[in-house]
Length: 302
Image (cartoon, rainbow, N blue to C red; front, side, top):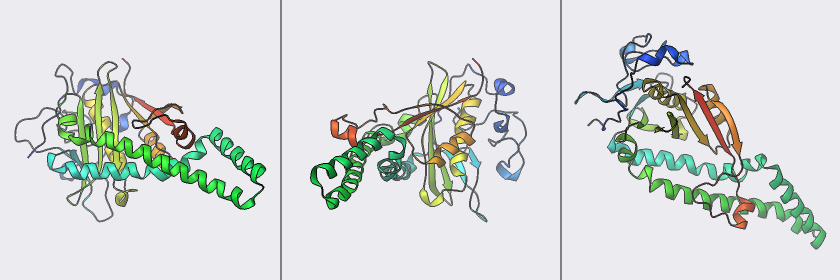
């Protein structure tokens, strides 16, 4: 059964603004593929000539649009299509696994992004030696500090997951597929959901936010995340939004390179972002820090 369509406002034209877009590499073609790439049936796509049916109101009974993307050598490729209600648990699992990976990344790799915290830990290390004169206890200080960082990273991220899994990820169809200007896509390989991404419109500044992007760790490095990101850009262009924005606390360099490869510009970072689930206690401030990065891809001038 086709998921409920997540249509945009009807007063905007899908084809009109194509000529004004700043990223010609993502021109949308008939059949829902990117210009210059293979579309459904193996044919090569050409310039925009009709609106894509994905996440737009379409006739009853029309099958959900499928964008064939990257895949393993010799495989059938990845299908990027709209979320279906039966895929709720698979999407939640991919989201959960992706967020859980951030616990060690935030606790250990993330420390490199916070020189003041590093200095504080070094002073605590020196203070321990000055007070105890014990090499054994002094050597145990870094282990204890990293252990506390892991504990508080896990505590905060689990609280964040609890919040997300009981809000938008509790009912994806209701939160993303029904409201105008929102949509949720899945990447399907050999009948299994291997990636997810969502889009949510902000009408006050005519932008679309890319969020909830995650790919099953077993299928990374195959271009699936980039194909999911492009789907959000296509959605924004078809529906005449002026820009796509995103925010992330990801530590891995690969995640930031992915956004840049899609055309996003880094707009700044903040060390004072309050993640849902944070209590802002003194211990939490000492042992849990995140850096929030903002990205923007301008599609056209207002």
